[in-house]
Length: 518
Image (tube, rainbow, N blue to C red; front, side, top):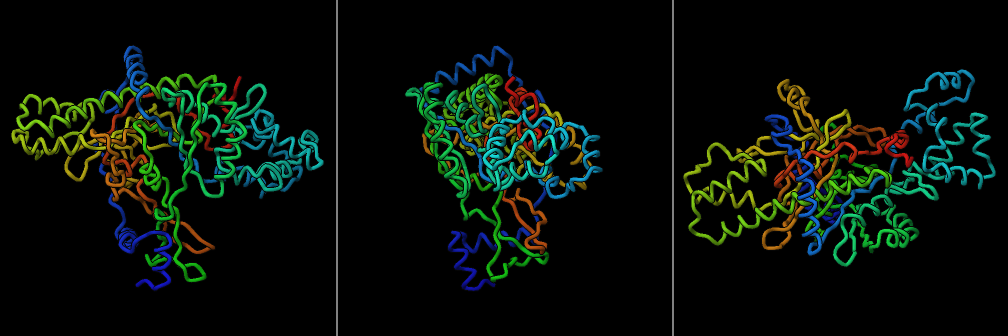
């Protein structure tokens, strides 16, 4: 089926033919839909931590952090094109006539072009925009007065000016301070220095970036690194990696045959953020904080984030302590009492929210020990959950697993059967969603790293319709990083304040009060 040219292409991407064949089979058969049992809610899967407990967990983290390696992991690849979609649409369609200008004046909603130009000086990038326009022998204020909107947008979005639509989100100016402005990348550096420092003051952060943007990140870091290290009394250790080409997925035509480019080569597409489990798997740290590049706030709102990062990490360390003790007992003690086994099963079901399958014979000690060991000896994550106030994001649910157990999972709408009324009803009753606020433990009770790809549910990918050079095709995304890629992890869900979640999905989000340094 595959030519020598195809096989050479696979070899160059480090993808074996078996993987290609599995992907083609997935296009033909589709992925099975997740079977939701019920939404996870407060007191039924999501823990609500009182103020006294918050203080205790912060102390647990602080006490342990001195002897642990801590690291922050930030997915930061990809351009900010979608963030500026409405501006690009306006740039391409606005006719600069009096009638269109009058329509613009009449449409004054919070996410309208009138609001964008009326409040343009509220954006942190305003100074840079004005300067580059001045360098091009123009005057921004006069351009605004004369309604030269298309020229202004061209200077903001394209290579004529700041080229914002083609830069990664991490390098866009998000927040303005008294004497300077910060990119979202720099806000993450500040966070890193405030909760991942070890006893020596070293703070580690790892970003996944594209090859095209890595040098730009390094340039930005070189300009501000010393300032942040001096201000926050620490040393930044910043590392980067790119999404591996071996995680790209084959594209197919509408007949599920490999989609070929004009030169006869097969078209591959990036496998989505789930591919980053491979990047995560190459890191070595005791505790890893995961947070998206666009979810940052200015300094005046950071303390709550710092606090709950420590709270979640404290919960992780407490759970790990129990797990490691239990695993050592299961491995070393040949005569574990029934009471101890019952205690372990209770911990699994109540603290780790994994309900044993109905066919598990609790009265069979050897079978129960083997089951408990397999469930305890897995990576662990503590996931922050915020109340659902209309923002998009994966939701927390109880879901049935292939081994008959029921556990907590983060589920996206694309993973369920929308034609199933009962499943849709369960999905719509979710009270919380995941803001990609994860604290991860990737080492076992012996201190060895888990092989993270071993814990992926490969049946949780999804297929979507795309186009390439005017031709329709089908594309496949791998199981999402915090969905299927972590499906077989131990998961603990904890409610966190909504103020810890302030993503920037469109440029208008930067006008929200949460992103203003008042």
